[in-house]
Structures are given as structure tokens and as C-alpha cells.
Length: 216
Image (cartoon, rainbow, N blue to C red; front, side):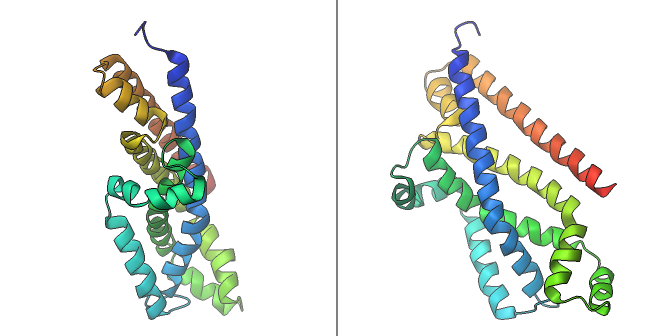
């Protein structure tokens, strides 16, 4: 442990947090409305539209079925187009975001499905428009579940960021692979894994506590 460059580990930790936080926020900016559309346009939904639902559901399902490492490779040309390179922290944010969008969408859809039909019917009976029902009743009612889902998605994206290290994605994943695994430095592997476990624990506990407070 004495030979570990802790400033290097700290830099990798900050890079990982940067990738995960930015990717999570960007994924929710697209995945949240996409999940709302999936929930409301399905059969029996508030804005039922089977054609639109089937198209979006097919895109989401196909995207989710692609292993992330393959996703990383496939998106290299697009990543280079967006940020000018396919390696490093900024480059990794692109596939992390795109890979997380369908997961976020399905998680949001599942959270909205937990809202009781009686709440929706009561809101409509009071004269609320469908948009008002979505924004004023469904989303607030599903908010605790959405918070829990965001914690799960944070952990998922964190795992993806670690895998991105295999192709020069930067962060702790890159340090673990290039400096720990390839160079047989088990102490670096242990430290990077331990830090990732701590980040996962903090992310999950924070999400659960916020969700509990919101419910109360």
C-alpha cells in the first residue's frame, strides 16, 4: 500500500464521479420524458397510442439488450464526432449517457405504473387536463420511487464506467485495468475496487434516505 500513488487514485476517483454524475443527469434529461411517454401511451394509458408505444418500446428493448462493452465500440465513431476523441473522461460520458437512457426510461415507466388508477381517475373527475394529471398528480406521487430508481441507475452507470476502463475510458476502471490488472499490482486493484464499493454504498444509502423522507 505504501507504494500507491494516492494523488493518482484521487484523480481517478474524481474522474469517475464526474463521468457518472454528468451521465446520470444527461440520461435523466432524456430518459425521464421518454419513460413518461412509454407509460402514458401504452394500452390503457392516459395518452394511449399503441403505434408510438410499440416503436419506442422496440427501440428501448433493443438498446438495453446490447452488452455495454459492445455498445462502447459501436459508438466510437459517434463519440469522436461529438467530443473529438474516443478515450478519456469526456469521451466516456457519451456512451454512458446513451447506454443509460433506455434503462432510465424503463425504470421511470415502472415507477409511474405504481401510481394507483384511482388517483388518475379522481384528478380527471376534478376537471384536470391530461397534462395536469401527469405533472401534478402522477409524477409527484411517483417521486419517491423515482428517487430510488435514480440511485439504482447511478450504481448501474458506475459499473458501466468501470467497464469503460478496458478501452481507455479513464477513471478508476482504467486505473484498475491498466495499472492493477495488466501490471499485476494487486494493491491497486484492491484500492480501486474498495473505492467503487464505497461509492456504490453511499449512492444507494443516499437515494434510500431521500426517498424515505419524501414519502413521509
